[in-house]
Image (cartoon, rainbow, N blue to C red; front, side, top):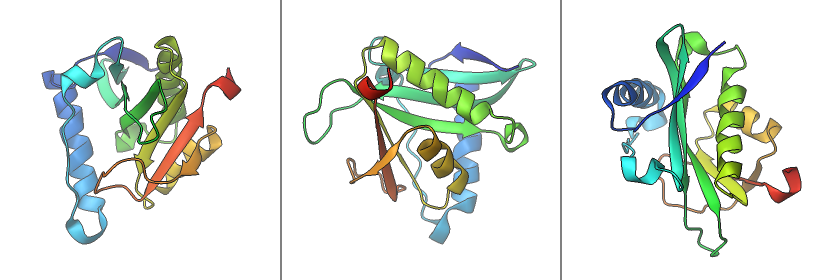
Length: 159
């Protein structure tokens, strides 16, 4: 069973998994216009966020983070899910759902009222996971050039 480890996204091991993630996304991205943005450690520090590495048998097989985000409508205590990734060999085991549930649990611990995220429509498995986890599509809330879909999950209704 995999375990979670808190890390700075700027640590060497976290950076390595992010490089693998961004390299894979760039290779698969339609039109070859993927624009990676490496996360800054300050955005993923308690009490405003956390970055997790997913480990199995001492190997890093994935990552994901949450960070507090200002919403255009001024909604308070909203956290954004970022950089959810599983290495190809770790997929199909339910670990994506496990990672998403852990990020939600930690967001609740920070007092989050809602979670938001963005994704690209070509990431069909991710979209399926988000919808099945209670996320609903919403209008664009950010200017991420790599995103075509935006989702939100209100946490009060799911306590």
